[in-house]
Amino acid sequence: MMLTDPNQPIVAIATAPGRGGVGVVRVSGKGLAPLAAALLGQPARPRHAHFTRFTDEDGQPIDHGLLLYFEAPASYTGQDVVELQGHGGPLVLQLLQARCLQWLQILADQGQLPLAGRLAEPGEFTQRAFLNDKIDLAQAEAVADLINASTAQAARSAVRSLDGAFSARVHQLADDVLRLRVLVEATLDFPEEEIEFLQRADAQGQLAQARQQLQTIGQQARQGVALHNGLRVVLAGQPNTGKSSLLNALAQAEVAIVTDLAGTTRDVLQQTLHIQGVPVHVLDTAGLRDATDVVEREGVSRAWREVGRADAVLWVRDLSLRHQPQAQQADALVQQGLPPSLPCVTVWNKADLVAPAEHPPANDAALVVSATTGAGLDAIRRTLLQLAGAQSGAEAPFSARARHLHALKQTDEHLQTAQALLEDGANALDVVAEELRLAHAALGQVTGAVDTEQLLGHIFADFCIGK
Ligand SMILES: Nc1nc2c(ncn2[C@@H]2O[C@H](COP(=O)(O)OP(=O)(O)OP(=O)(O)O)[C@@H](O)[C@H]2O)c(=O)[nH]1
Ligand SMILES: [Mg+2]
Image (cartoon, rainbow, N blue to C red):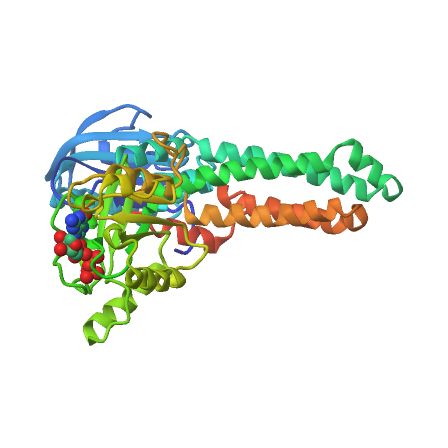
């Protein structure tokens, strides 16, 4: 989205499309008192709910409802905002919107407004709130997260981000990094005393502390991201180990076809589970083997592709075949294909076929379950939650985006370089200063303290119109 004249009045239907009890048309811009007066037939009192009749240009009634006028800066966008609350029918709202645009044109023609109005772009109201310093970027994104939240937990986390919980942590860290920058840059001016000076101020200790703090924030942000995007977990393993049965058992629905034939599943099936409010996308895939059948072979290659882009894998194995050499061999091949860095939990399935005394010990890396009896399913759910980075029961302290994680990671890379250079002795202080500056800039990307138009356009384009 282009950044156009930020003062031009923008108009949008702010409520969701469709019929509803109440619908809202919103206008934001500079100097909208004349618009409020025109719509109302008299000057509007700020922050007062005026009950009125909305009419078209011929004086015919469109609807009756409320007009609210918020005077800058005490509004959502920080500009003058006029809100019309009418009945929530698509036609009524279209007419009200058109009437607002018409008045804005008239007022512009009369010279009461510098520019006529136009329809708002998606997210433009929130963008203006950002541009007018009502909220920062992380908060703006939280608005979208709140609107899109599919669980109560996701909504609560988004509200906390919107309240600035995430931003506050980032600001605090940015302050610490800034202090370090000041320290290092001040030292640059007094080269002969630099080492002693930095040592006295414990620059290294401060840097280590900042990285520690960054790690905590990163972990919480990861939880926030998991809450927003959901985790992708692939059920992978040899044919017939019970992957589809497990998907069905976890989803409590007959989603996938189950047969006793090896090679039943070919297409990738996805089911989203909500575990304690955290969305987890579980994918059932074709059993991994050297398939001869063309269709199955395609299924196997899709299965590997999903493994390649998964956040984690549940490696499903048949417990009743645990000691069978052929199955062991085939499992070894599966294991070779799993990326070593990918979090992977072994799920021994079909525990009902094996006497409990012969079960392997269950732990965090290996679960013993039965899709048939449902034994161990709770352990799988707990594991999925852990993989999502959520401590049991605790909810993500704030919502976050992959964009934030990226910025935090960049920050840490620069801090790490600075730390290494400092430890080496302070011969390259100017480089340390530069790394700290880059770390500071990377942190700024989270809250928008460092702004780039491209970033802005990208973020706000995801919004719905009227927000
Ligand atoms: N006894 C027992 N049988 C199971 C269990 N889970 C699955 N089965 C059976 O194992 C067979 C294979 O199950 P599926 O769920 O189709 O296995 P899959 O891993 O999806 O197989 P492919 O799609 O061919 O890769 C079916 O006959 C299931 O009824 C279990 O926990 N206990
Ligand atoms: Mg299957």
